[in-house]
Image 1 (cartoon, one colour):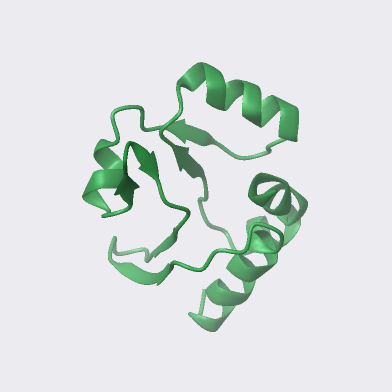
Image 2 (cartoon, helix red, strand yellow):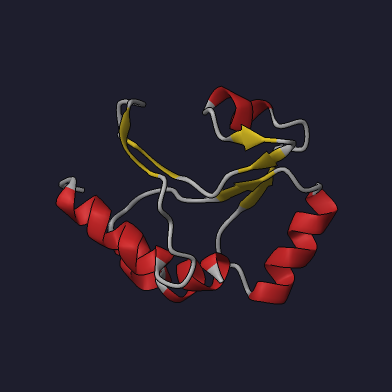
Length: 102
């Protein structure tokens, strides 16, 4: 559902001139199939070993918890959303980025 919410918010997200993507601990093959099944119009990256999820502190028993990180243009973390709503993720991201001044 989160994937579909982001897909459905593509125009608003692209209007903000940003890069966005999802990262999963699933395989590249699984992520590709998932993206095709859900009509993803953005990258879904594979973090199979969990190195990225571990570095961001969201790895839990081999899986990444559902968290959104807002990375500022200077590379710093501008905000962390640990209460992601899969149904409204796209709209929520647009609202948060707008409130952060992007």
